[in-house]
Amino acid sequence: MNHLNISLPKWVDSFLAESLNIIPEPEAQMRFVLTLTERNIREKTGGPFGSAVFEIKTGKLVSVGVNVVVAENCSAAHAEMMALMLAQQELGNYDLGAEGFPAHRLVTSGKMCAMCLGNVCWSGVTEVLSSAEPEDVEGITGFDEGPTPPDYNNQLLRRGINIVPEMLRDEGRAVLQLYVDLDGPVYNGRANS
Ligand SMILES: [Zn+2]
Image (tube, rainbow, N blue to C red; front, side):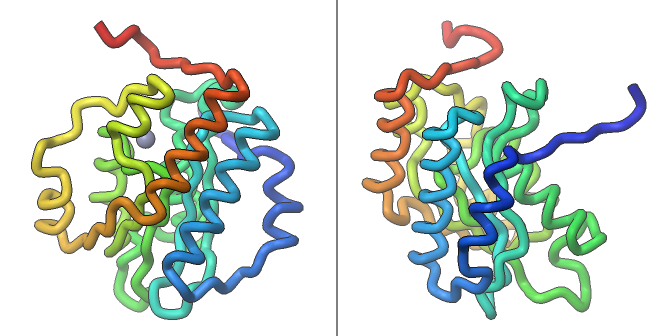
């Protein structure tokens, strides 16, 4: 093996074909992401997490991501990672904040885990909107969020990344609960002990 080929589920194509590709209002962007996440749960194509990258000024949708860890045999295939990597491929640049690009934001159904927080710092996005909090993810589903820093928000702010947490948090929690109600698998690499 000397290359990677990691795909979003097939239903994403029709989902996007039926969706607006410009969503200017931040709360509407979050509702879009939560709908995407719910679809991933109902289709049973991955964990209860969804994300999207938007241009901040215009609301243009650049990419989406859902969790495809199990389907793609890849522990890194979290929703945020997929959305950021696909946006970078779409724009042909590892830095979404490169000169000449409009500012981009990541909208995500749950606040980033340790891995995704790192990638956000290096992705070039300048804003993050998140819904469910780490304690929601861990308390409702049992997924591990990893060793995130206690000064989480400040670590982002120090790098010029604004974060707006707890947007539509109740709706974000409800999506997590749906996953549990539908007996979605929890696949942490190791037990939290
Ligand atoms: Zn993650």
